[in-house]
Image (cartoon, rainbow, N blue to C red; front, side):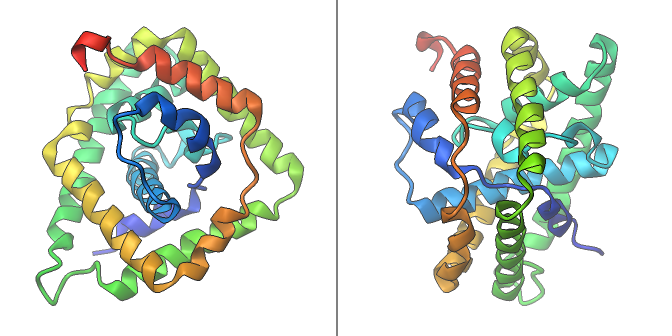
Length: 242
């Protein structure tokens, strides 16, 4: 079986400086080290990115930076995926169809990962060597992005900003769409995210040099920071529901 988790690394998946401006919205969330932020972001973006890649060859992710549009870090996966679906669908019927298909795709993908994940067995695909390679690929991809022509980065920023702003205008629809994605908030998914994060954290501990490209990443623009904070606030549950 071909390992699907590797293919999503083509999506650029670390916009970590923005955590400084959006993390305050989640004051109850545990404080994470920079290395752990990298590991969690790689884990979440890989799972979402791979599912979109399987579903529609990543068309909904064209001209957007996945790392930007799934901010902030502690937000639930269903809300993060819902904003992409809302922005990428042409009408309500298409949105509901895409959401159900994405939920099925994501559920099957995480089930496949769970079957391959058992680290207690010698046959596990997720060996330290595999995770080291996954981290190395992500670091190389980020290093290339850091050195890209500015016009390429500008294109991704404009597309990401358009998505964030349009979803802020449709915040109620984003929340409604998230309810169609139960697989993204299941215990199985939470377990997979945590296992992948932990394995990537261990890979970073073995190879701290791979943090360098993430440390050198250009901070997000003020417009992006403001758009993320605005959308997150609109998607937050009422205080009494937390």
